Length: 300
Image 1 (cartoon, rainbow, N blue to C red):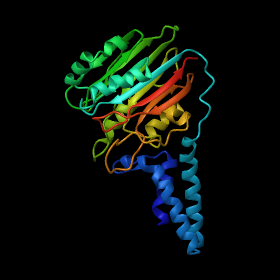
Image 2: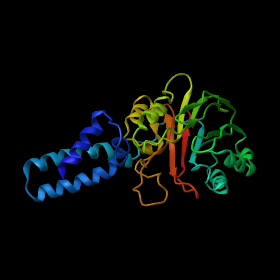
Image 3: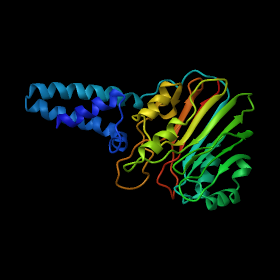
Image 4: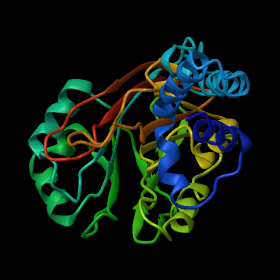
């Protein structure tokens, strides 16, 4: 009982990320942390000295990795103007567009990033009046899972489109009324759910722009990765902050919205560390397997 959790803890903290099935499996690290505590109780009740010692180290290691996500870090003292971000995966365009418009009306985002945006869903979204609320857009609608888009209340300039394995990630530079320039990516790399998809998934995440430089950066969408995956940890180490983690909601699952699979947090808003985080919320949208995420950020 102790050994699998001990191996899990070693792999998680080592920085080494094997291919399938570890890449999808490591998303369930919070559940492994809970399981390791059960293994510790069993080893302790049987008075097995070395298994108990290994189990105790394992529990401590995984607790150090996981538990900070449940506590706010204060949100960073950036006190500039608000930048509200809403991100939603439309599940091959099947999401309830009227429900999405209702979320827009409720959260009043400055930026909306969409994934799995099909041409048909784009037509329905435009007909529903999204441009009345978010007049500026960079759209890359495609059949299947590869479409994406960025809508905004401030002017957008299309950036270099990121695409690997048919999964597209729209990119745009937003000029905020406060004078800031914000580089935005609608994130959606390949899903590493089967053998052979890790290179595509890794390339899509590695292609995301590093934090820093003259422009602020915000990455929002379906990362197909949690805070336990090495590429996301690298982004955070390079100058991003996860809005959910900053607000103590890093353990709130975003996928699947329905079904029997244990939930994991794979939808994120990563903000340039120079920006503040004032709020985060996981929302509900009918017709899609992902739960939209909302964050209120603050300019420096």
